[in-house]
Image (tube, rainbow, N blue to C red; front, top):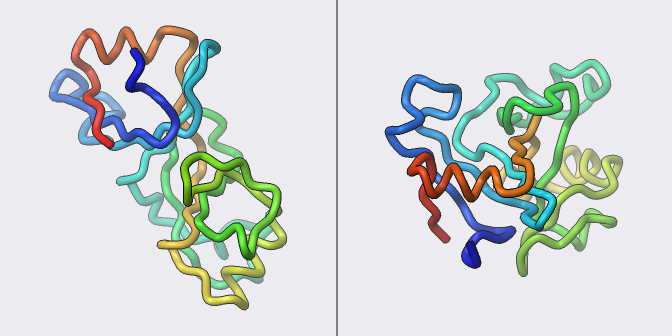
Length: 144
């Protein structure tokens, strides 16, 4: 599926109603022959960064439920390569990961907000061909 690539959003269809992916929008951040990785972008975790023990001195900052995989790990998407280094460019203005000390500094002292930085607990992952099959069977639709 040639339209499937990093930077594309997928939205669940009624076929996923009753599952953890009901009414879910996911931003794909990686798609290659090995599989796909994305983050749920429309489900807040209802927990804040400062509520995590390792970041308890940070300002309150919203966390998102990124997905059911690796839920003990924090992931970062950002639009501030001027403040956060080492991120992997996903689209022209969106980066995955980066120096976590700089992420916290940007939040606490440089005025970065959730339009600049999104923090996710967990992610969504698919093995090779799995997401394509789910799209073909009607579980997901693509939109830019």
